[in-house]
Image 1: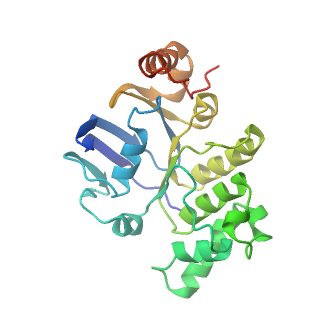
Image 2: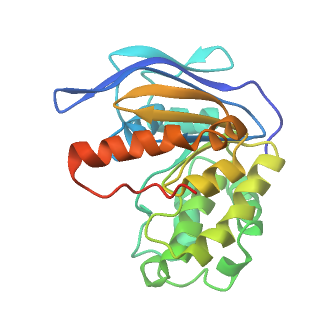
Amino acid sequence: MSSQSGPLRIEGLVVARGGLLVLHGVSVEVAAGAVTTLLGPNGAGKSTLVLTAAGVLAPSAGEITLDGLNLVGARPESIRARGVAVVPEGRRILRSLSVRDNLRAATTRLPRSQANEAIDVALDYFPELQKRLNAASGSLSGGEQQMVALAQALATSPRFILIDELSLGLAPVVVRRLVPIIEKMAAEGLGVLLIEQFATIALELARHAYLLEGGQIHFAGSADELREQPELLHSAYLSHHRDTASPPRAQVH
């Protein structure tokens, strides 16, 4: 899938949305061949970081570098071509199209033979989809739709994949089915940035961890370190709960 390479570096990222500053000088490094997790409560800026890395949002300061090249200002298709794929929150697949056509849509920049090979590689991760290739994607279960979204990203032959809210709206048993997929991605050389509401699962998968709160990084280190300091996560999510009067989404054990 991907050969080992240098990291994807996000440095000093400052991003505003709707006139409000969302990210305040955020720095995150995603290593190749490993899972890095970004945790934090709703509104912390996690999705903003992912959309900025994808080229959808423009930062007012900071760099996103890969192989020494600053990707800030590049169009989303150029960023994908450089090897950075994004699975946005909410399973944004083309629901009226078949599974096969969703995967074809993800490989339009490739020659037909390469596209077919890339699709085959992506489907190796999801044998369940082999039987549903001609089904309308909107008719699939939530778990299967998430598999399509992941397969779309994998079909672009990425070096790095940024996954925003892997388990959102999915049953725990479905999430557990996706865990070995993420492990396989990293084992085959992909750098994975995982944003996940279940902190226990994220820290189980990840080698490196970041905690984002109020648009700033409050922890950066190994996943083991953060696992051993659950009070940091509790503080971040409970503080957000008090500020917003909405239930925290992280499941921390």
